[in-house]
Length: 489
Image (cartoon, rainbow, N blue to C red; front, side, top):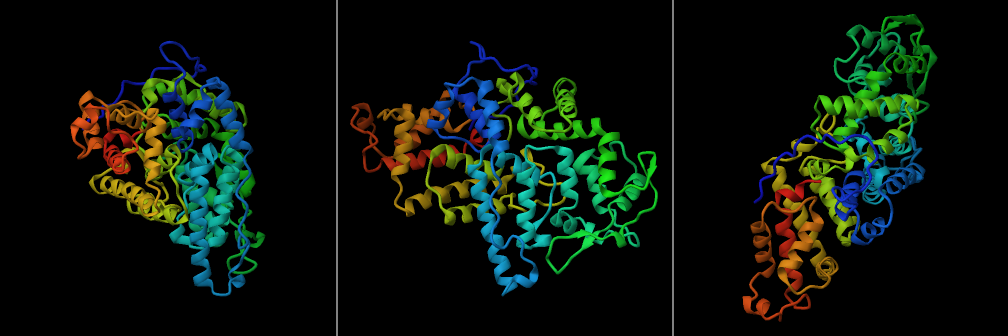
């Protein structure tokens, strides 16, 4: 197998990407956009984008994602515990329904779903902690609502979301018994970054400003503010004393620490969308510039996203194929690119497999979330990825849809009968970059040829109409998914 080596540092700037003979507007770059900013696209959609300019493409992509309506609420969205007839059974059923809804949204909603998943791994909660369907929905709805919105208002809304109040013990935070859990994560994870511009005293005083959100009209209802449990005394945060309320504290945080917040968030977004490798040059010329754009737009995120995604830095060759796919990246991108059939049965199995190999939807490992990139891969999770993808293809066989394998081979190779042409077309389409050596293509071609005698290929007798062709393409796809290159985007 090919050895994956790290590319040299990306020195391209945030200047808008203008195609040239050295950096042409190509299907490879369009696939790069779709794999990073969504979960892939099929050949027809990719070809259509070739007629657009890169800047118009990104402009429309961001605008459309920002305008996309949130997923409609289920009928049980506002249930309290008293509204359930059989709580344990119905709650479990509704949770599973919403897991499927979220998965189907994720594969279909492009940039908005990509960012929704990002924020679910930033403002982390764990379903196993609260395990309550209405709170699961309300948390997801908030992530969708603010996915491309105003970051300051996002932070404000998250802190009093019932799911977060339950998860990080905000509902236990009262004037008589303050709880510092949320205040600590507000600084360390959600805004400033670990040990960056705050003290333990700031955390203690901030927790007092966050008191009072612990009132239920009935069990399982939305958690609301109760003035009787709020600490209305003076608090000193970042060296300034005031009788901070919740809203006042959030305003104060963003007034005093806007630079630290913007740089922390832009750095995290950069590592997610561009590369996990950040040196001093990238910090100063890319991340800090994006942070200033965020500040200049009063923490509205869309202008910052457009600046990054339109840039020559994002489109640089050294940005392509350098991030390891998450489990959902592997399977959702493949399904979108192949146009293969899937249904709720398959999606339920995908959620199960993804959980086994490290990405259980709504359940990151802890409050810091999945650490992504290289942490996705070890000897156990890698073989689990292979098994997940084998299940997908076997499921298509079980449904009598093996002709799908031939369809993708025909479409990508222009219905060639040359095994090397077919192999190269398929492998290059599904991988971010070409394979390392010609030998790698030769090995893959031999997999496609299977047990068919060589003279049938030499004489041009074999083609994709052969009865064995679906199985042969199946074998090639399974082989391809075990390549190191397939794990990269």
